[in-house]
Amino acid sequence: MKSILIFGILLLLFLPEVASQSTGSSKTGMNGVYAELYLVRHDFSDGFVSINYERVIGKKKRANLRVGIYPDFQSTISFPITITWITGPSLNHHFEYGIGGVLRIEHFVDPYDPSPPREWFFDMPAIMVPLMYRYQRNNGWFLRGGINLFLSWPTLPSPSFSVGYKF
Image 1 (cartoon, rainbow, N blue to C red):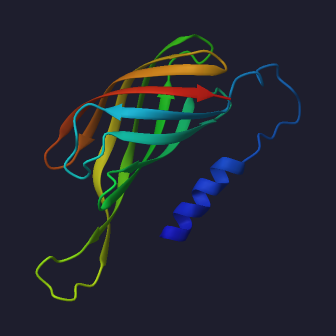
Image 2: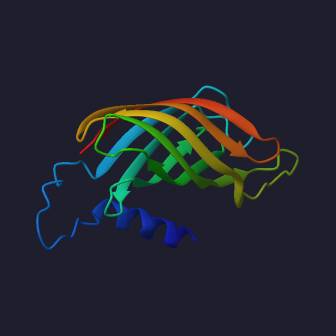
């Protein structure tokens, strides 16, 4: 599981854009990095900020594949993985919507055991549905704001704000 996740992240980072002819739309940034602030914490992590990488996929440049890391700096690291679509990729103002999941790695030490072994847990605590307003140009800085809906127990709408850079 861990090796597949690492391979997928490396593939996204080093995946070159392959085209037989220049179409003139190569000016559009295909990669982006952004920090996302969650205004409401979730049950599966105590952190507030995730760092994300996204890659534009598809010929119409409407879909983005996102992989992020969301640590709480105590015992849990979560990885949001989503695919999102934007309206009007050649425009500056967009509605962004998508679906994905959150993978969680958590280590647990039993406080009542005199020689506690460190136990690792891997699970998917929530399905993630981003519903965002997005302002972006072809390259450079972009802004996102809206709701990340986390479908779990309990279902939680988390207001979120992001600042990033497309290249």
